[in-house]
Amino acid sequence: MAHQDDDIKKHTRAAALLSADFAAAVEMSDGMKVFKKEDGTSLVAFEGVSLSVQPREFVCVLGPSGCGKTTMLRCMAGLEALTRGGLTVFGKPVSGVHRDVAVVFQRPVLLPWLTVAENVQLPLRVGGYGRRDSGVSAKERVAALLELVGLAGFEAAYPYELSGGMQQRASIARALSRDPGILMMDEPFGALDALTRQHMNFELVNIWHKSGSTIVLVTHNIHEALILADRVVVMSERPGRIVKELLIDLPRPRTAKSLKDEPDHYLGLVREIEECLGVAE
Amino acid sequence: MAVVSGQHESATRGGITPQSDSGPRSLQRRLLRATANGVLIVAVYGACIGAWQLLVEALQVPKYILPAPSEVAVALWTVFANEGLARDLYATLVEMLAGLAIATVSAVIAAALIEEFPIVRRLVYPALVVLQSIPKMAVAPLIMIWIGLGIESKITLAALVAFFPLLVNSMSGFAGYDRDALDLFKSLHAGRFETFVRLKLRAFLPSFFAGLKVGYMFALLGAIVGEFLGSDAGLGHAIVQMQFQLNVAGVFAVLVVLAVIGFVGERLVALAEWRWTRWRGRT
Image (cartoon, rainbow over the protein chains, first blue to last red):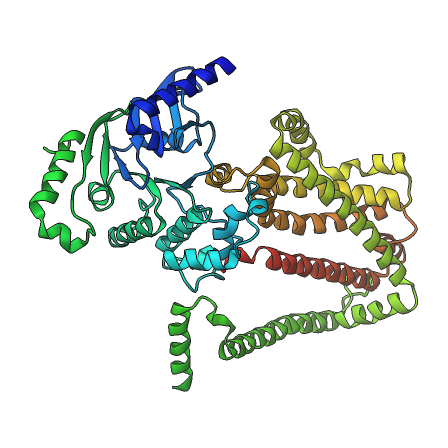
């Protein structure tokens, strides 16, 4: 076992020396996930997935429903173990959720008996974090986070008093509360109406700029991916494989207007992605 | 017109701030509404009791069949003043509350173990299904034989009868947390104990209070039935004594006392429920 660890260390070291990958925030190499079903058959969620995300990069993983992209994100976040393949965070192999990773789920998953402020503070109170973080005033930190996500003044509100979009903002503030290097977001705006969704997309880009995080976001919405991403990773139907990676060189800041100012560029990217997904016709 | 504009203003504020109901004007209105409600209730039920009084007098129903409300009121005063019902009330309260406490603690612990340890669930579940299907009152004579006619047998019976609704509701309470929140706690490196206390134990409360309301009434029932079967004190004992004397008005008086116990308990649990599960919001 120790021998194997040494091998991995050597391997990572060598890889780091040979390439610029040492700086990768998250890297999955040849990842595969197989679920054993109750009837004895097995289901391959995704296979042969190698993906390297650079620090401060915004990567969107795009794919059809049920293509294993959510499972892929859960594995990258460490919520589930890979059946095969390696996972490193900032160059170090990990099992379980890395301390620098925060997850935003499809649903806000706020605890209904806590106020918004208490929900945002939750990560600072559990998992042994409270003992480390004694100096900074938690209240100021929460106020700053709520300000960042546009929920200032809602500290004392309960989740049921918020709209769906506001609840998801609160869950993003919660994810940011430990100041994680990496945010893993699983279709965070899937349940929102189209207008709120687009608004939240632009807000998320702002938050990304201000917080300096690395973000991996899973979506099946091409428009959303093009607003957000530095790079779009397109996955095939299950078992999910990466079929294409596109650098999105649309100029930032991207706005609803700026995207329409360069329709050819934008539509070209849309067409390219649609062709990968097989929905062009 | 003033009323209409006031409502409109309040509705507008309600749309902006969640806590708009605490305004003095709306408090006043709520008090007014509560008072009107109270007056209506007193009027309707007062009319029913009045009708009862009139019917019993008009039809000359014998006292040992159905006493008039006025006779029940007199009997209520008499049983407390002359027949020491306070002592019976105290005995029954001690029995039911002791039984309820035992049932609550053991049901919550059992439900927590069943939730946390699958092996416990697999072992205990068949026994629960079988025990559930036995009418607990049918076991009462056996308990009298084993434990005797003292207060202990009433406490046991109250606890036994209250245990099952508490257990079933506690189990569904512990299972009622948001499954996605498990992933959240996992991603925050929260331990099993932390997850239990901060997630499952909080999500458990609404269902638990539903069980506590039923358990409270069942504990009272268990204590009374225990007293029927043999005792020298308690409200059940008092009912049996008055039955022997054909003191039907006295029986009604004790029933009034039992109804008050039930009502006060229900309100107390509802108050605790409101205090601890306010986060569920208004429905």
